[in-house]
Image (cartoon, rainbow, N blue to C red; front, side, top):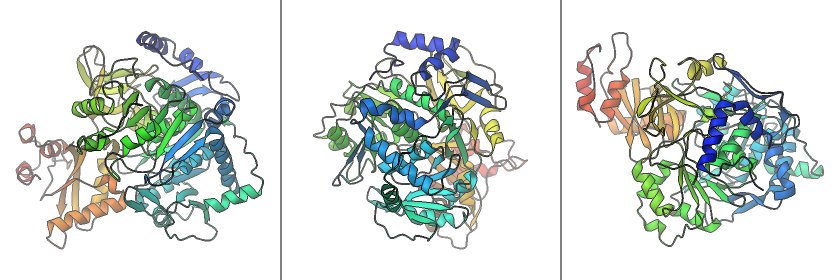
Length: 637
């Protein structure tokens, strides 16, 4: 199997890029023609960024699972589709061939139908990293249900917020999940969430940890029991439901600059074409390679580069249940050698964490199967890039530093492995079809090279966000209203003398913690729910491992004066309301916050204090009480 759209040289990249700009419709039509369509599209692209309204492959009919599974059965039926490595290295791994994965997806699609899930219904999936998570995702797509995967570390309140927003009447979960030396009681968290969600009709529960769970008659059913019912029916086929190119495929919730998470909607055809195209080209995937993306399927990286992109390309993709540091910090390297992994795609946070353990965990590891390394989630700092290059890639494996977002669906700016050059800490060049532009705060284009500005995209690509679920106006104001006729990424960017792009960080009130975006307002709302908190302000600061840490300035009038205990109470409150991922790294108690006369908190000043740049606070004359700043500086942690 070969990929006719795979770019094989720098000259071929330049030609593809040029065509994608001058003839985008012809360019993407050619790529889309290599997929299976029930009905070919009538029009490749119709769009405007004002509403916004973006339609790719308009009038086309297809099902993404026919492209990820059915079409591979004749040539790849006995080849591994998914390799699953369990949390404990003592447990048995599993391999699902394309035929076996197809059978399991068809089987579980019938389970969903037996439980009255229909096309267009929203299905919340809250599971550990087991193969059944991929099966559940694909089974939803097969019958046209819209899946919404929620990361297994989110709290009951966060789940309830997402269930309510999506009006998801169906939930798929596990009794529990393993993550390192922890056991997480997933069903119990779902039960707590459902106290607020009486509209949920059915909860399907997979057995994983054998944790005792509460099963409510009429609502809760066991995955295994439901599969047996399908088996007694003779394992009937489940033909893929015909979908329109622009039908929603999934909703994935992401933090924004306001407290309420927003449900990013991706549609079937454009997402399929772009994730597969970007997977094959960025990683230079070759048939037979083993691709190991270490992300969780609860994030967009897992959707695009564990499930849909690799399976669309007929690749072998790995799912890892555990964490990189358990039972020791050599776990990734053990997995690479055990399965002869060719492509390793992980986060700078993980690399920095593993660097801290020194070279001991690498002793005895060959890592000679690796041909491509990748990073995702945040810009990788030079020190971590060089460590990754020298000690993991042995200076023989190109590193692709990929920039993209939940909203973009797939990788947007990145070098292509071995094709276009990599530069430490640079995402480098846009993929064909991606037209970046730098603008100043007024939206005026900053032309030329060796310049910095706000990163926007001036033309749609197939996997661009279509809407935010149930609130299209929020999609418009967040991404398309800041600057006319542009998608605003929220990131600052530098373009060097050769035209390479380097992402410099968020320019809005969103933090990038361990590669995951968390809205400052969401964390502030959670802190403010603690009974003793009067008001809070949250900013990011440089963190050696996470990239960005969370620094909270809190006005506290609680009943007891034990600062350490108060900090622990606030931290626990945030964990309960959002999840442990949003816990502040530092909490500084203050008497007041720096505010303008109109009452706006000057986060710019707090950010400089958190970063330790006390001499760069800028003008404080507009503050209601400039003396507040000195008190905060004196109390900095």
